[in-house]
Length: 489
Image 1 (cartoon, rainbow, N blue to C red):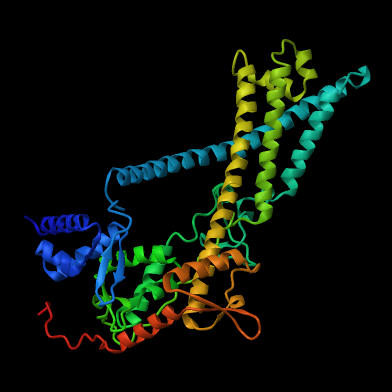
Image 2 (tube, rainbow, N blue to C red; image 1 turned 45 degrees about the vertical axis):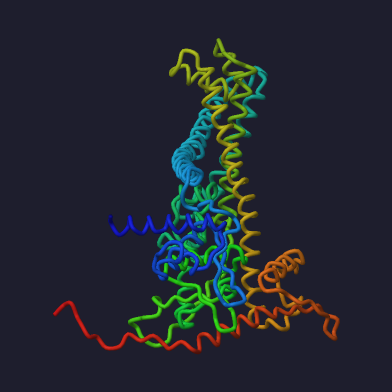
């Protein structure tokens, strides 16, 4: 049997023992019942804690107890997990395909239809003006001519006095080399299609690489603190609540060969000895992950987004006009009827060269299609805006929680209520949630000082901080030493 197969067999054996013990066992219990090496048991127990959302408890005797209060529902395997993973992949594939098709539709509808409608309006204007001159003395009703002239005048003003007249380089201020440079005074180049897609779909998740950034910061912190980190410190770095922090620290143990240990004071710490040897030498520098970036609606200037909305509105007006006319006027049988209907009559006459009955083509192609497109062109940005607002509230709270955790860790004995900032509005609900989450982890005492201010004391958090410092003091710095063998010789 291969080494991989032996490891999987040992892992299944250990999980079977945990199931029989109802999800509570020490490393010694698991070693006794599996006959596996103690070091192997610890590694596999960490893997089980990661897969089944296990918890680590420290007993009065200083032993680590692996506990699985949520049972043995795997986070990575099983039919439900596979189905969810497949569903997400299918959804992403369909979304990508749908987005690509809609992008093509956008360029055809927004620019193509706008150009077509402008062309039809100009031709209609030319024909109407010519007809009005020849019939001016007859006193014929020219309401259709006046309507067409008003529409075309509006389009001409839009065309010559908007940024569209400036060409693609006028879209997207603040871009240089294809990257967004923020609020710069210089004007960069950005293709029209990118500006349109930015308005409809946004510019992606600004925190797409956040997991890697956070992981680098945690590793740098571990290396700068002699390979040791506590759960409280992990919470401060990541801003995660105690439950999520416990789940993720178990994943770190599996990925980076970490192991839970108990200090002399009975504090749970996590050691990552294999992360210590560094070729650069010297003391590693701890990093602090930056706060997450809030989502923005679009990197376009508001004027550009407003222009796209107006162009789409013009398409909607034309689409509504052609749909209304096709439903009310219908088929035209004579040139006199066509002239009386202005733009609709002229379009009908032109389309007669394409189809024997142009009514369905006008009703569906020039009516329903732009109306349907206009709906999606506005509803997608609206839904995205609502989603961004919801996500930004979540991001703001996560950033606030991380900052509050850091403040409490630095001063666990005397934290005043108003020192815990939760945004410009001093959101009491968010502050209470942060205090309750951290209090559930370490316990919290509430008191009133001589100024009448509410203060919080996190005694267990202070003990954890002191115990971690003492534990690290007993660890010698890891040094690589001189090279004793080189495979190149």
